[in-house]
Amino acid sequence: MKIVHVTGYFQPELGYEEYYLALNQKELGHDVYVVTTDRVPKIPGVKLEGSRESEFKGVKIYRLPVLFEIKGFLIVTGVKKLLKEIKPDVVHVHEPRQFISAMPAFYKDELKYKLVADQHDYDIFPTFKAILTTKLLRKPICVYTFNKADKIISTNPEAGDFLMRVYGIKKEIIKSSLGADIEHFKFNQEKRKKIRKKLGVGREVLIISAGHVGRNKKIELLINAFSGIKGAKLAILGGGDEEYLNELKEMSKMMDVIFLDRASQKEMPYYYSAADIGVWPSRATITIVEAMSCSLPVIIPNRKVVNHFLQYGGGLSFELGEVKQLREKIEFLVNNKKERSRLSKEARKTVEENFSYRKIAENLIKIYNL
Image 1: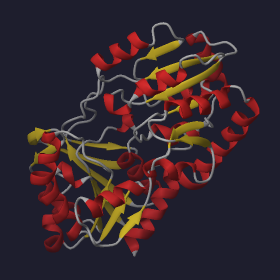
Image 2 (image 1 turned 120 degrees about the vertical axis):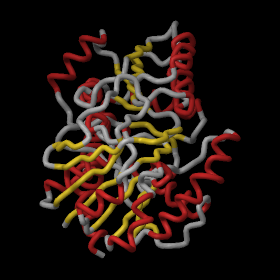
Image 3 (image 1 turned 90 degrees about the vertical axis):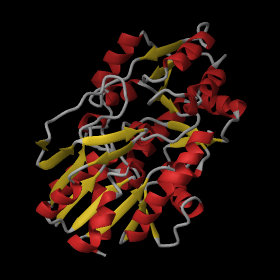
Image 4 (image 1 turned 60 degrees about the vertical axis):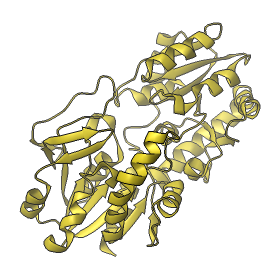
């Protein structure tokens, strides 16, 4: 099968869904291409990799010049020409709100390929600008794309609800999930010792929260919950909003909190291996399932968008915004090594059996063939 993935940004070192799906589908014996832009997401330290045409582990990558870009909305030239040359059987578009990912919907009937569209977003930032942009710009583009699609995929349960509630999609929405590369994200005892020594962690229980640091992640809830817990250290791993980071550092300066710059995708498993508990106080993030793949027990909010990660075990949940309840969950695991060990085994097994990108890629091939 000849498969084309279309996405606004494609950076292998970030390890996003479109990278792992393309790579695994190639390894499953399919011809796989990625059509993307010559831009990178605005993440500190991330630079463009590859020329206009390149290849990564057998996946052919085409980077098209951007004519206009604003807040992830990318207008490019050359999509139709490329699709004509490739002659794909399936075009899988990621997040049509980026516009480059909506463009294949315009050419589907003429070029005769099957169109699969997926949705990641599950909410709108509560600002006037974001709401207006969604209603006037993103919604019409996304509604057109999803209505033209042969298959619609939601990468988390709330994304499916978003499609119906905000975009009014009435077609069948197939549930999928984000996942982890279980060969890369796995526990490493040697790296555990090295990182703990580097961070000055001895017998203390190391709690970690990783990912882009922004106000929507509500890290202050975690710091407040951590306050007063004995026998533990907290590591906040990831760059982002400098003003917000400085506020977090100020509020935690009398606590045992370590702030770490963003780590590379290669290094992330080492930090998860070094930790004993992973905590994410608010928004969903792919780092949750990647941490679980490294046998790290997690504590996450009781939200539909992430609850599926715990349906087979591997962590605890708390009611969103309930700092006292979050503190109780953290204290319980800090003081209960046996329970941490049990959840650690569950976490790895959960990802191996349900959220490995190889399994997700295999399931999507079945969906393409329906």
